[in-house]
Length: 116
Image (cartoon, rainbow, N blue to C red):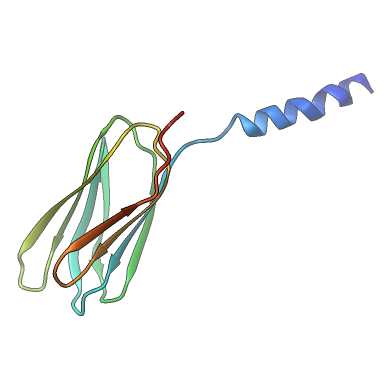
């Protein structure tokens, strides 16, 4: 019985202590043309997709190791590569970030919580 009384609080501490900070990223194409070779660089790595259709979204979840700036790279239908600098990330940051490619610009919408 004593073991059961100790197991409950231990389980709560174990669950509460196992949180891993991550960024939930969404890249949205709000243009009327596809984006090709879409890549989002972040500190220590990158991710992407071969193509993103007009009106499409691409979702990816990652953990920030180190610190540095985000950068979006994509190729348009005229085969022109675009290299767009984004916000700064620090190790341990977490929360959602949306990168919206519009016909005339790219909007970065981070809702990040810095590490504690």
